[in-house]
Length: 422
Image (cartoon, rainbow, N blue to C red; front, side, top):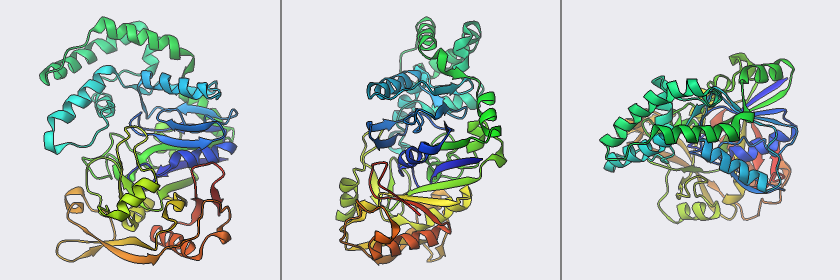
């Protein structure tokens, strides 16, 4: 029996989708345990290139059950578009299901997200304006509408009317146009017609798989530095992408997880606002962005790029209890003569720290670097550890040391087979 959580160890966009796609070839179930369509997982395989936002990355294995879990927030329109795109490539979605307890991202959530972000002016958080924050806020305020409510129209009306009244008050406060209840309810009925066969009670589905000894993958979105509690608050997502939340969002007991793989790029990237200590504003940063195609899978925004942050990986490894590391995009560093690794942060008073402090302090730190020799040899076609350039192996072992966690996988390309297994 194996339950494995796949967690982002940086600011998101680490390549979790390609790691899940690789591991899903031997998985019985893949569960997205949090987040919404505000971040994407890029998967490249023999079907093509896909940017998945809600559909679990195990969808390409016809023998894998894929569940959008209770801890997620789901925009039905976005989900239906994604299902259509996947099916158009010849991929079956017969084994795709949605927890009836997952929250819905409603049209008013998206409107509020954009209006609220605009009202912040120069103090913007960097939201994707996909409605994720307002949807999780309604969940916390106990006025959220869930996917299972679509199956019970009378119950849905009772839940939707006060939720919309509350949203319309805020929308009009910001100068927006109030939404019609009847139009929104009709839209919900269209979602019911399209999705009813996928909406399930996750409890028996997940429980029976777990008790039956099935191999289960838990797929997170974003990374620890965007965690609602432990990330760079307030420049964070509105849920918890850490491993401790994975069983809750998936519908498993906490002791179920026996492996946690932290996914991390061989350098650092971030999308959105907030402190990012190793960010580069020079030719090296531009090299990483262009060679790594560092543009958001959801928004297309250029990602902020920087050297590898060894403080952040130690922080992530501790909080998530990583049992192994998956390092992606090593091939992007091919051809750089010199690399840097951040090992500590220096506070304004000169004190060195080896942990991620709260945001107000993190904004003031200076990264302390080690310099490492790069390598000229291409790594893209390497499939075995021993065939990697010596300097690449030294660099990777130093990351392993900073994390305090053994290397498990090294990715040298976007394709499924471009994976070195240790």
